[in-house]
Image (cartoon, rainbow, N blue to C red):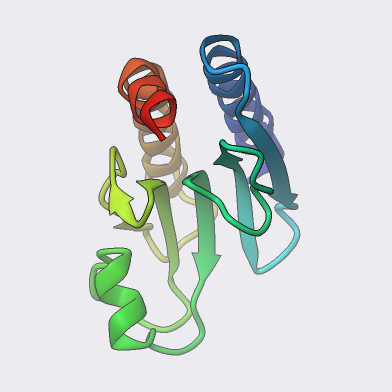
Length: 151
């Protein structure tokens, strides 16, 4: 499975999300990040802060899409926070996370991808999840603007 196209698509979707948020809430500060697909954990995301706060230190809103290969079972608190489904160590998980001040405001439930990374089922699972994440970004702009505008 080639992850560079996933990186490209989710970066475009998050860029558009950031642009729409910034145009509606000009005082918002945004910090973007990418962990490249070659790493064990691939992630693309952004952190947002208002009121002159630094989004790297005091993020009010976080959005990211992540694919991770967990070598060991996660800490139970971590698994509960991110609603991770049961999985075998070495499995790839993908999740889209959208949180405002510690509260979920539009995350998608994480999924465990099929074990064969070269299979059509694996790629289809990634494509379907990516499409759902892109749609969720579009759907959540107005509610997020309301949340950040009220911060």
